[in-house]
Length: 137
Image (cartoon, rainbow, N blue to C red; front, side, top):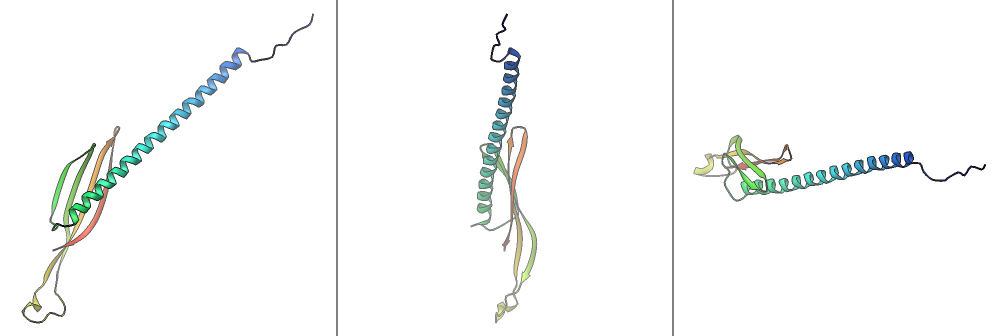
């Protein structure tokens, strides 16, 4: 009697191949999910930096600096805080003046300006902080 050899895969081989393919698909989906979350987080950081720069520019241009500590809601889930505080001061006397104003001095103050923009990313609190120093009178 002659034996006929069947060519093909056994059920066990097919099941092992499906399990391996399933594990590879799960790993791929997790990598895609992680990449999407990282892209979203980077986008939120970019938005926060733009908002912080805008607040910093508004605080330091066109207005006289004074000590202030303000907070508020910036919309879109972003919270902000602006802090302006004097860090140092000096009395300067102009050079080369003649007459009654020669002995006058000008008080100059160095202000530290800090802006924080914060938001929640899932269960994680994130923030961006920008700082500068400005001379005010």
